[in-house]
Length: 419
Image: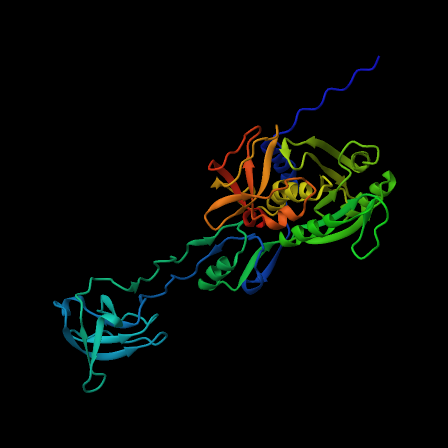
């Protein structure tokens, strides 16, 4: 008499991420390359950026106006002769007592001056030479002056190793005069889908066939994450074909991402193929969507190994598990300092969710104009329109019903996509 096998316990997401990080650590990318700062967008720093200068390099005016000595303006309406004119990029000379200097934003504050009065609080007075100015306020020492080094001190580290180079980070590197950056090589990722039912857009659909949307979604996610992507297309539901695809994918790649074939059906060949070509763990995650996930290593001919992550085949499941599991691995491979999931934000529910799942749910939501979170009406794992419509995922605990007005935790899609 046979007995049914007891179901495996579901793996919490945090434990899965811990295993993914531990398994990825020995495979971190060590190769680097040098790029101009102009071309560094989206790359990950391999060497810190340290400033060789003070920023600003000298005291300068943060407003158009007049540089003065506070001691010379004891009352509103004091009139001072204008002794010089200082545009940005043209150094002036020491300010003579009892005079003012016409100065423009970014102009170097002359020696002896200790304040700038904005031009809206002054009135030009015609006269010989540069004329004079009536200062219509009593200024405070230091006002409207950007002090030397108030932003960055010479020798300070302005960008750490592992930082993703955003537009503002590139601007900061440029502001301290850094023209070249040492960055981590792009992750090399091979991706393929499995399934005899898959057809490509533009082809006629045969009975029982579906278009392979995941191929486009996953490739797009990997490109958006800054990866160098090799697309191996659709692999037939055959053990030997899957083994051959894994061998091809492992050659020259850091990571293999597959879609479909990670369940336990007769036509799901990824697990035996990966075990024949390397090693594989098959998990059942305690999340919805995205229960099945596989993680392992595929041997390479050079003695190394490529990591393997097998995603579920349902379009939303593949999308969500990629965001939650693959993107953290990509960050870890590049040595990024923020490899974990982005922090959740508070949000108010504009919907009811009376029948929660036993698993932790990631519900597709959109932030409304009034600041509340609206729910996409169909949360099925096959409804790809939900992730196009949504701009975030509510992280809902297991068996947690939601009522309108409840405070929720949600992660903006932009944060999840910023791998």
